[in-house]
Every structure is written in C-alpha cells, then in structure tokens.
Length: 257
Image (cartoon, rainbow, N blue to C red):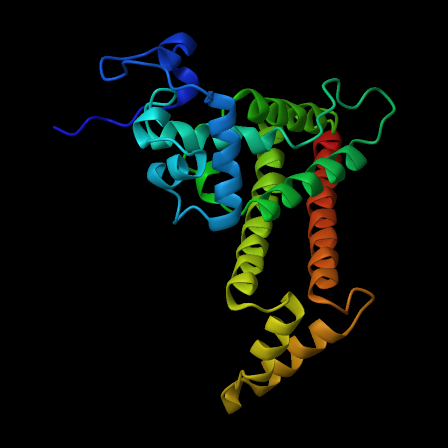
C-alpha cells in the first residue's frame, strides 16, 4: 500500500524534521536548511518547476542527493519550504489599517504586491494550490488580508467571500501573466514582439470578423493602450477596482438591510 502524502512540513515536529534518521549517518558540512531552500528558489526561478529535481539541486549545491535528505525528508517538503520563503518577500504591516485609514488603499497595495509575487515566481501558482500554505510567511500574508477586509464593515461570512473574490482573482490574473512572460522568454522574444507576431499571424474565419475588429479596438483604444505591460497593468487596475466596488456595494446593502 502506497504511503499517504504528509499534509504539510509545517505540521511536523521541527526537531524531528531536522534530526538524523536511520539512513543518515553524518551531517554534511557547509549545508543547512536555509541554504538549501534559497538555492531551491533560485533554481525554480531560473528553470521552472518541471525541471526541478533533488538531483539537480544537489548538483547545484555541490553535494550528493542523500546529503540534501539529511535536512528534508521529501521533495514536497522542500517545495513547501521554498513556497513560504518567497511569501517572505511581501512587505507586511503587522498592525494593519487603523481607525480612519482607507481600507481600499491597503487592499490595493497588498493585492498589487501579491500579483507581482506570482508573476516574479510563476512556479508558486501550482504549489499554492497544492499545499496548505501555513508556513510563517504565508500566515502573515493571510492575516494581513483578513485584517484589511475586516475593516470594510462586511459581516464575517461575507468577509470570507470578499477575500476569495479579490485574492483568487489576483491569483488567476498573476498566474496567466506569469505564464505568458515565461513563454516569451522560452521563445526568445520580448512581450511586445510576441504579442505583435501572434496578432499579425492570426487569421480569423469570416464569420468572426466583427468580433476580431472589436477585440482590436479594445486593445487600441483608451489611456492604457501601448506596450503589453502597460495594457496588463491597466487591465489589472480596472479589474481590482471592480472588486473593490463590489465590496462597497455589498457593505451598503448590508447596512440598508
């Protein structure tokens, strides 16, 4: 019978996760969990999740794969540690918004930072959906989101929905944007070059001519037209404002009830 996957490295006892087991006879010198995790993040950023392996990591560290297993039991454990490491890049105000602060600005700032994190590290998207995200840095982010949404005035059940609405939108937007950036790097083009070539090479069937013309107008018109990055930034800002407007409308509805 196959061994069930552990729920989370963070649910294991800290010391037992680091202590030598039966197959571990001598602690390798020059290694520690922090260095291993940092190297893992660099490899994932450079080569992506699909190419990552414990053997590849060990080669980068200049040790054997068994030396890495002195510090982590499984590849999953290491990926979960790497995921929490990059959540530590987010600047979190532990106190959150106070009386008189505009929760909207706090929400915009944190949502924008989360989008940037996902785009900067596209490999975290599948991992964030795969693990519990209960490491210390992920929890700081989660609690910061909760504190901000609590300031909206929504009731507790609707606060949950507001959090899901905003940050699942950001997750999806950042994931697609990050994958697009990765693809451009893989084919050796800038994002503008890739988009221009894709659009110029696309030939729609005659019955779709009107829809294509409308799509072209959408991309060409408005203050945010320009480079692909400008368009992505502008679209994100509009979509986030719609999320905020939805929260405001729900708050007003609750107060009027």
